[in-house]
Figure 1 (cartoon, rainbow, N blue to C red):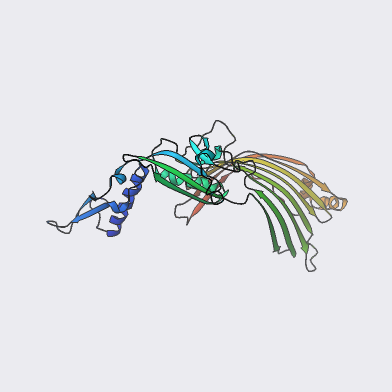
Figure 2 (cartoon, rainbow, N blue to C red):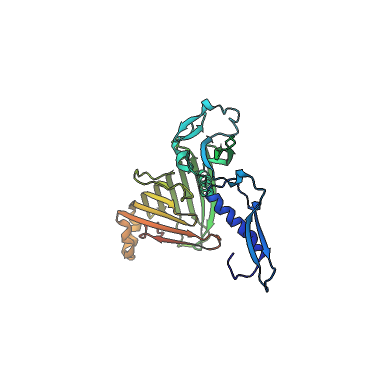
Length: 364
C-alpha cells in the first residue's frame, strides 16, 4: 500500500500476506496473517481514507517471538520405519540427527540439501529452499516436514523433522516410436533405459540406454536408402560440483548444483554405401542462480568420428566432390555455455546457448 493510491480491498488483504511473509523470513514462525488488523478511518476526510495497521490484542506471546533451530531430524525411509525412532538409532552428522536404518544414503547429501543449522534463526526462505532441494534430488516419492516447539515456558526454539519416502532405486524403461519422412522412408525405433537413482549412496543418477532404429523404404522411390542406427549411452549426474573449492549458499539456490558426465557410442549404417562411427564424451556443470535463471557450463566435449566406405560410394564421390569429407576421420573438441531463463509466470521462457556448432549425423 502506498499513500495516494486508490482504495482497493484486495490490496489491503494482500498487504497482510506480504507482512506475514516478511516476518516469516525473519524468524516469526508461529505468526499468522489473521493476527493483523487494518483499520479504515473515513471521518473528517473528503473521499479519502486513513489506514492503520495493528496487531490484534489477543495474539499469544508464542506468535511474537523470533525462533531458532534446535534439533534437525531426518528420516530417510518414513513409512517403513515409523516405529523405529529411538534416539540411539540416529546418526549425528553435521549437527543433524539422521535415521537411516539401511544405510542407503551418505549423510553428507542431507547437510548439503537442508539449509538449516543448529542454532540458526528460522527463515521461510531456507525452509522453502530445503524442501525444493530434497525434491529435486529425485530420490524421494514424498517429502514432508514438521516444526515442533520445544516444550519450555520461555522457549524460543523449534525442532525440525523431515520425513522422506524413497522411490524405487532401480528401474527399466522401454520406449517404442515410429516416424514417416517425405523421402518415402518410414522409421521405427526401440530404446531400453536402465536407471539407478542412488548409484553411490549420494543421490547420484546413473543411467544406461540402448537405442536401435531403422529407416526403410516404402513405395518405388529410387532415391531413398535404408538406414540403420545403433546407440549406446551412459549418463552420470552427481548432485554437487566435483570441484572442492566451490560452495553453495543454502539460502539462495533452489536446487543443488550438478555435475553431468556423458559417454555415447553411435553407429550409422547408410545402406551399402558407408557407415559412420561416433564416440562422444562430455562433462558439464549446472546450477540455478534462482528460481528463474539456470547456468550450464561444458568445459570440454570430445567427439571422435570415423568413416568406413565401400567401392560403390567411392564412385559417387567422383560425381559429387562434396562427399569426400566423409572419408576423413575427425576429432572435434568444443566448450560451451548455456544460459536459461524462465519467467515467474511461466508463460514465456527464453534460452540462450553460447557454444560452437557441434557435429551431427548428416544423411546424404
